[in-house]
Length: 481
Image (cartoon, rainbow, N blue to C red; front, side, top):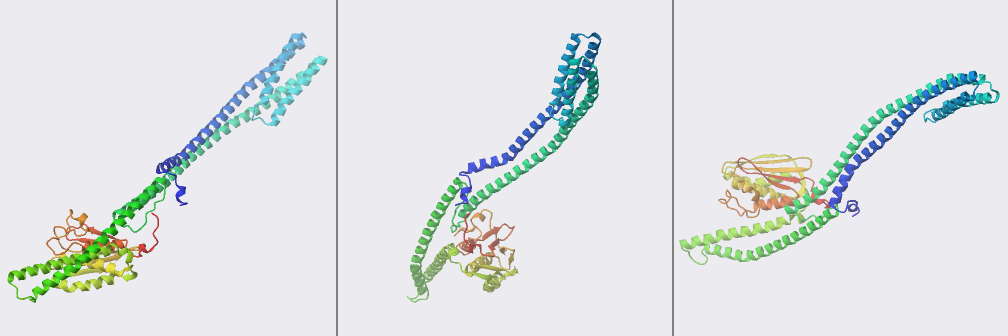
């Protein structure tokens, strides 16, 4: 029950969950691509903006220093307050631009300190000018600032250019990571799809196996499907159907057994009475009376064979419950059964061509003997005089394969689907004595051994193939489907 709880409550939920699991890696990869591209795009725009701002401020700072130097010289010549006021205005713009330049993110602290030192140098010289009227310190400061500022601005521009190049390199690396992420997401999605398909295939396969077992008449193993709730619900209904079919089969078998036993007593009396008449115990008989007694004997014998066949069929239907399992040599058992047919086959000049591989199998001796006997009896009965009957036995690691091939009239394609049904007789078999139960009984014993009996299509004759497990899987504890 704990394993069942891991499934969704319904098959539709399981399919929906499968779609989500398949789509989730692709959605995650898409989100990662979107975030990564958006982040890189923002950083690249910022880098371009920094370079652009750096270029603009560099030009303005250079122009401000030129204007400051020109206004200072004009003040020295004119000694008027307007020139000094113009200098102060340009100086203020220069300081503002230099402060803006220092706030560019990629600049190192050393370069920022250098730029602020220039502001402090100019400020000290300007204060000296205002206090003493001496312009020489300010000239010296401006000349020094021009030289040092150009170096600092060039260094800052190089730093910003390197930052832009770094972002270009990161964008290339990101492109590769995105391709890897997309490929990984597609691979994970394919793995999830494969796992979901395998799970669905396993669940549906178990359901199909249960239905096929019911269709083949295998009613002994309990049906208990696991999976989503609605699949377990179907499993419970299949189990109810199995129990119902099993009950009906037991009722049919019981009726058949009772009827067969009730018929045997009056039939034996009839057969015994006909035998006494035939032996003239009641007095001499006329030729017509002899003919009637012969008809009574033959039909009573046929009816007796039919009743015994019904009982054998009923026993075969319950063979799985009472098979005595033992290790047998399949090839030796075939040879033993063959010995019982060699005399009758020799009278009709039939011969057997055998290819028997040494094969050990765990099975019921009585059931396996019945399978061999019925198939050989069928082949001998339908083979024309002088024909050859081919018998083959091979095996692999898990299965034994027993084949009987005759040269008789074969089985018509229209009769093939019903050939293993009780009492069914094809057109070719109606001219030959029999009651049509041999193949049905053989099939029941094969099914009791968890095997398979097939009619193999051939151009002429009949080819029957029996496939049996070597290691008796029916001995294992039945498992849930």
